[in-house]
Image (tube, rainbow, N blue to C red):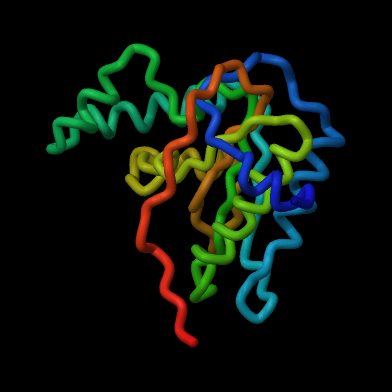
Length: 186
């Protein structure tokens, strides 16, 4: 098995991190891998916001917690009621990927970028967690100020985040893959 396939099959979502900062050269390599993701018509409709300030990540989580505590869905309220609630799983940093609002395939293109970055992080000995729920408050008028704080350009919307850091958890057995998800047409 080659190293690329080993990285794809080995990468897992990490939900507990050491508070060690990630080296800038590793962050730069991960970002470059995101920029080289495939995109429809090579539009590259993404913008990457690197957040190494844990206070900013805490602020985003706190705003999301407010929204979730008002949810009509009990599961969401219970999750937000957890005193340790943190969208970014206490990672020391995250990369937020925003997509151009006028690009018809921005969501898929940005998803490709995040996956490239997650695999690159794994190959560099880092843990990551692919997150979409971090943007809840940013879709509300009272949380829109976060877009400015994150430097998200006009015409872009946050789509995904990748929490990054050195993993601090023992992973259990990997869940088996679902059966009957492949059809061959000869």
